[in-house]
Image (cartoon, rainbow, N blue to C red):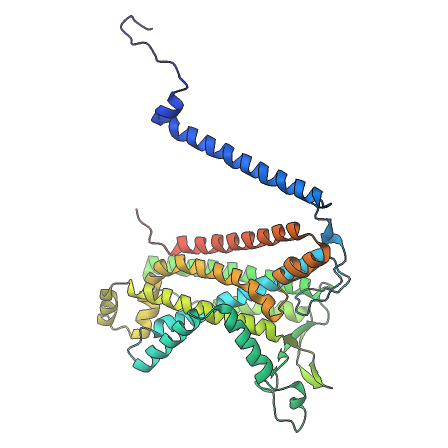
Length: 410
């Protein structure tokens, strides 16, 4: 119940949208949103009008048209009669392949080089410094072309591997390094569960993922026992068995056999052919990005207090154990955030594959398909969307790992 002494309630006035701090921020955001929407509308409308003036429309139907070109490096079945959509899928898989392999090798090289840069051995320290400064201060494209030229001009020809030739295979006569690429043993399915080899490999991957999930449960149980009793049970043999036995059993049931390359006529046949373009791109991306990762690792290690190393030494830990158990686990909190950026850079830098003829998504969807169909706008939009989604996925996965390594505070 109101009384005569209650002050009158002030009504809402339009001037409050500008002068009242309670509403000013909302007003600015609404105006900014309206301007953005108007800008996008103008851009889309202008694009449609320009396409109409050129006699074009905005349509993705070209993806179902026959591609009419071959792709030399592919992970799934493809022919020149396949559609542009299938060609784009082949290019996407090729991009993911080189990005995945590059991230793994670049991480290994970067961690090793970063640790060795802190070595007290003068020769080792300077050699790593030469590697880091040499690779990260020279454009990546030059390294790709240089490694490709080295593979093409410096390796023996396949005919040199014939009886009486100057070249010979390595690793027990199972791997051949030639100027046309590297030939390695491959796995073929004689009685696979699926007609497609890609589906058979997908089944093996599913089994491996399931094994990793079980291994994670085993490790969590070991952590719980260690926290409760102070003693950690030995589980490495269980983890190794869970990783190898199920996948090996699936391969045996599918009738998987090893297929070794051998010289036939003027070239090698059977096995897996890793082309020079793939190897050059993979090595160049790994070595180039590994140099940046090495500096990130070195900075992360230096960020850890020297007292941590001294305390570990006082407990009797050897230097290598100190690095693995004390320094690196703490340094990961500093290393992971900039490491994510390097993974993203490596993935996007893979678009330079066109320089050596590696058929990634930039060469297929963003290159030949656009030239044949004239759908440059649609093709570039799809290409940009692919790199955006792939980058966001990498960031999401690495951010989950980053959150797990961060120091949890109360």
